[in-house]
Length: 313
Length: 249
Ligand SMILES: Cc1cc2nc3c(=O)[nH]c(=O)nc-3n(C[C@H](O)[C@H](O)[C@H](O)COP(=O)(O)OP(=O)(O)OC[C@H]3O[C@@H](n4cnc5c(N)ncnc54)[C@H](O)[C@@H]3O)c2cc1C
Ligand SMILES: Nc1ncnc2c1ncn2[C@@H]1O[C@H](COP(=O)(O)O)[C@@H](O)[C@H]1O
Image (cartoon, rainbow over the protein chains, first blue to last red):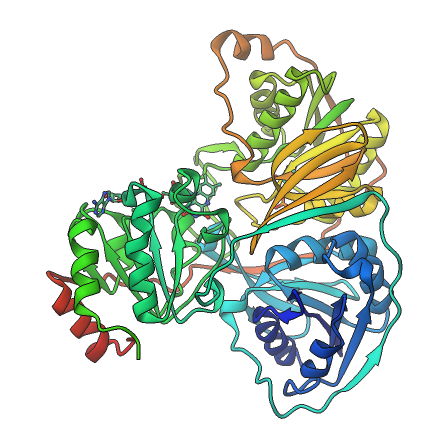
């Protein structure tokens, strides 16, 4: 077995879900190589060589790869894939776009969002917004996989000693042109890897009221998330959305504020260790999955909670 | 320009699915079915492009059992012009489906394929990407806006860290995210009219595509259930429990 893990980086910094993907690859077994592709990424390739259990780091540096356009990476990965039994990436928007694209070039049926490894051909994946778990077995000679990062521990960034090898880029697609990215920058921890997530829903009534949740998140060293209704209402940007079609999170503590608990929202947070729900409707479905429910108006509850918790030291 | 919109028939998004006792799949007998919500958004966007004078014809296509005709009629009632039904026992895997769609794109000389980003039953999130790869067309995945211009399309994609703007040369494949638009309801006259719109029937064989699955589902299980916990009545009680009982803060 030889496995290639596609790392994801943003502005030269590793996206942490890559480390969870490496753990999933190690559970399959065999040799695990990591591809670092981008512009100015040799520093990152160097640091990836220290990740525990990585055999080789392949580094592909080229200006064409700067914006991680699917089409520009796909040819490179297709050519590398001939040496591998598995190609894997995290189930982020980056990996979810890339892996099926490369799979089609290799005539393989991709397997999305695996949450468990049974053996080299057999995996578990959530379907129907996580309301069922399917065990699936692939008969393809190469397995193209995206990984649900919250289901796997993060690989240690220390203890490894992999060789770094340079590989050639394969050329850019002339039919796709990058214009710009509009990123929502935040000092807070990244949503999918935060230990605490405080999310607001339609009950927040206004974007301005999210400041209360930011205060709470900062006191707990956490990130802020949202339901689809809160994003659609324009309270917060799209990248806050937790759920079936947003991000999947599994923090130690998830606080759902003014969120009813629709199945599509639960799909993105029900694997959290502890769930707290604050809602005025005592019949809200969110209470059925909460460890601690508080049937209270959020405009009373959140300020009280903020007063009660001392800031993080 | 002709636009092809592939639409999938799925269990309605509001239904809570149940795993069958024999673990072979989920219960589908007597359960309300609907057009996949993301496909509905794709149909709506195609209609808007046509209404703005950017497209001449909208074809909706569905691959699967006889009942998929209802899903096609759904798209026709919203305003699409005609349908294609590729008849087979079940919705094929994304790769086989993309091969079928490629054949249809070539037969119809479509200039844009608008898919949903994900089917809400299998949660694959693959077909559009695969079709773009097979056609060699640029891919706009997870889009929340399309503007037509001289060279093709300027699109905005929803990505994990925010938004991304790309220019795609036509022809192209795109997959619709939730915020692309708010789909219209079909009016009664349009529903009546849709019954007379043509639907062509084909089979995977007609298109020369082998749909034998590559991935076998061995079993399907319920996920572990979470139990409702306790109710608290104030901030100090909650903070105390989080600190001393759950030990998460
Ligand atoms: C295909 C599809 C995909 C979807 N994907 C997602 C997804 O990824 N993520 C997602 O979140 N949703 C998703 N949805 C939408 C989902 O079905 C729900 O509509 C959405 O989650 C509802 O958001 P909400 O709980 O904020 O709003 P609501 O359901 O309107 O709930 C608001 C809650 O706030 C409470 N409330 C109001 N005022 C107060 C107050 N002052 N104090 C305390 N509580 C208060 C109310 O009691 C209510 O329970 C999807 C839907 C579809 C069809
Ligand atoms: N059986 C089908 N017939 C037609 N289109 C489909 C079918 N299955 C999936 N699609 C299209 O592919 C998109 C993505 O589906 P998936 O890759 O299965 O998540 C859907 O939103 C549809 O546009």
